[in-house]
Length: 622
Image: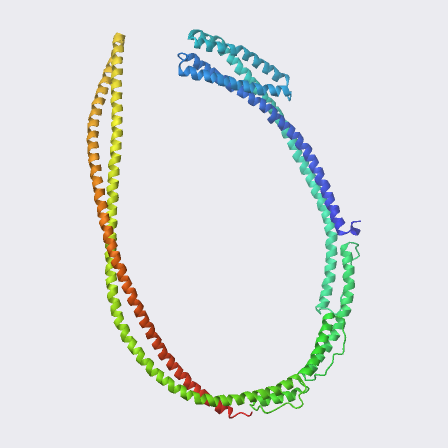
């Protein structure tokens, strides 16, 4: 059945079976994952949310108990501990109310809510309603400075109620944790069975897919090998390895079977065409041999059906006709004329020249004869002119040598002038460098003076800051002295029990007195430092003014030196231009002298060549 299917149908069949297997695996996976998702949703989105809200309850109640304790222990309603504790109680109460609203919203939805949870929540609300009024009463009593009553309510009522409240909340949290622990094994069992099921289905699917792939690929490979063997036999025939070709033995009805039938028809046709072309090629070889031996009238006798060989036949036939009409009827006669041309006899001609090449060779002999005749006349004229040229070149050599000698003397004198100007320019450049160094040193001194003045100003500011600090120390010593006095009064009031404290108070007073004296001494030293810093700043300002005047004088000196330097450079540039012109003229004179010598050599060579041309042409026939 599969054997008679086409290749696309075979591939579609295998692909369809694999798609069905994938759909089945996907459906089973979705079903199992849905169950696991519902279980995890129950754990994460329901029980854990209720557990987190209950944990918020516990945190609020616990922290409020601490805040109530601190409020009761505070001094009065204006005490910082009382204010902070009261603010914490209100903040934690609001946080508890928000968490309570979240819990009520979950219970209103009715999702996964059992009777035990409702019972625990009702108990939590009951103890809450009993505890909150007591807390409000404690706050009211503390605000009215009734500390004893507030402490009594805290110990007798609130402490026990908060303990019960926290116990109920912890019981609720533990119950939610127990529910989660019960759901987790269910999810694990489902996941474990899901893995086993998926692995089993996967192995079955792989086996079915591999079996289908093996059957389809086995048939396709078998067909491919048969086509390959048939084509290999045909290629062996084309490459002359075998004398005959064989057809492809394949009887399937798929694309390979159709392709094999088409290939068999072409093999038979090509085999017949190749044998016919072989006979044609042999005739072409015979024709080429005749043309090579000089028989330009030879013809091609065999026929062929191959377009390229037919085109070759037409080209060779046309070539034979063109050779006969273009070159000559007798190639040996043509070679005989060319041999005489090689022996410098240009008077020989091809008889009865009807072809293009024979006519061209005759015309070539005429042209060469004319050229040789003209060259002979030119050589005579060139021989006469070269004698006149040699005489003129000798006179040019003499005048060029005299001009070059004069220019060398002038150039030597200018070189001495340039050396003198360059020496002056270098001295001025050195003066400029010295002036620049002085200017840089003066600017550095100016910057140092400015930095000194700034440093003195900063020292003065720091000293002022120390003065302020000494004033603060003085005030602290004064306040410490007052405190020691108060302590001594309190110690005297306490009688015998305050004697030790009176000794401490006396030591504190002595310490305050010593601090005040030290502050006065430091203040005196700082005032002297301030005076010195002010004096140093004034000296630095005077140094800055002196450096400014020095920099002005240095700028004027540098401007004068720069003017001298520019004038020296202009003189050097002008003399250098004159020297360059002299050098250029000297080079030109030397060049003219060289050219005159070269021209003389050329004239001598030209004279020799002209005489050789005349002598050579006299030995040729034209």
